[in-house]
Image 1 (cartoon, rainbow, N blue to C red):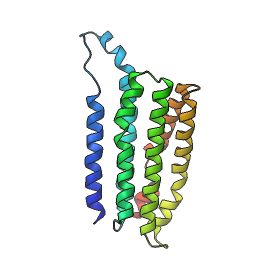
Image 2: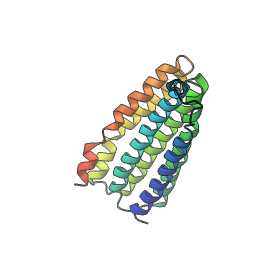
Image 3: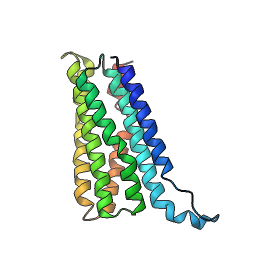
Amino acid sequence: MGPGRLEAFSDGVIAIIITIMVLELKVPHGDGIEALVPLVPVFASYVLSFVFVAIYWGNHHHLLRAAHHVTPGVIWANAHLMFWLSLVPFATGWMGENHLAPVPTAAYGAVLLLSGLAFFLLQRSIAATLHDASRAREVLRDGERKGILSLVAYSASVGLAFVNPVISGALFVLVAIMWVIPDRALEKVHE
């Protein structure tokens, strides 16, 4: 199988994830601006999760462009990533509905942690299919530092949710900012 088919499947899964997240935004009862106030935490968690899913989508695209062929290991690593990303709508809704309460915030951090770990493993699986001297393989290995830093931040966010969930939220935002700018080195491999 070529990487295009895997990318198309993943694009479909990610589109469904975003659709499910937006369907969790309920129309307020009332026609005044004050009716929107209770929705602010839900909307904020939606925006954060939308950004995370969009970051995964963009980086997934660049990552699959590095693949010359898809092995069963890459397929399963990709399915692993899609599984954890599919839990983002649940974790988003739970955290947003409960206004950064400790347990839902820790669960959200855990889903992000496991999604990040799955992406890291997918990156490793694709790198393993490339020739040892490949520029793409070298770039993938060099880019692992940002992934490891993200995993550390997500791990910390899970524990810190029980100390101060706002700190966890700040870590979520910091990781998103770190990933918003794609890895230019990986992009240049394909130019």
